[in-house]
Image 1: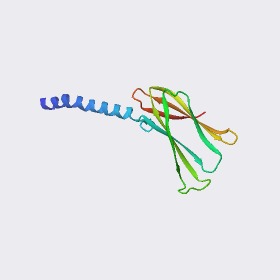
Image 2: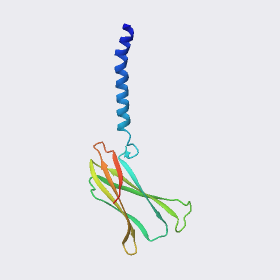
Image 3: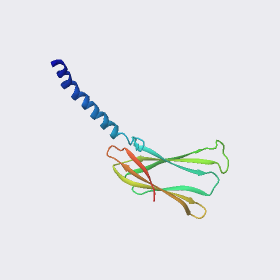
Image 4: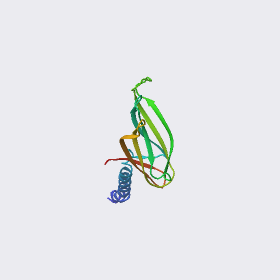
Length: 136
């Protein structure tokens, strides 16, 4: 009987602690899909080749993040006019804070904005980046 009590009082708290920390780990990591555990991150925009439009971005607070580079990939596999293109805009977190990146889909023949997309960016003290597309 004493052996069962010892096992119960010694092992039960360990199991309880394991359960508590396990649940805490799951709760703290449920946002992994929204959290970027890197100092650099990308925002992807789609467009078509051969049209007079281009994506232009504006960073509200350039002390929080900075633009690194833009690259693109032809989705149709061929260099054809009107083919779909995916553009990758790479940014780097500089310090903790909040900012917004605004993308305008601009007709470069008359500078008319056809579409706007906004992204709220939050950088934590470890330079982890949280990205959320803002909907109006």
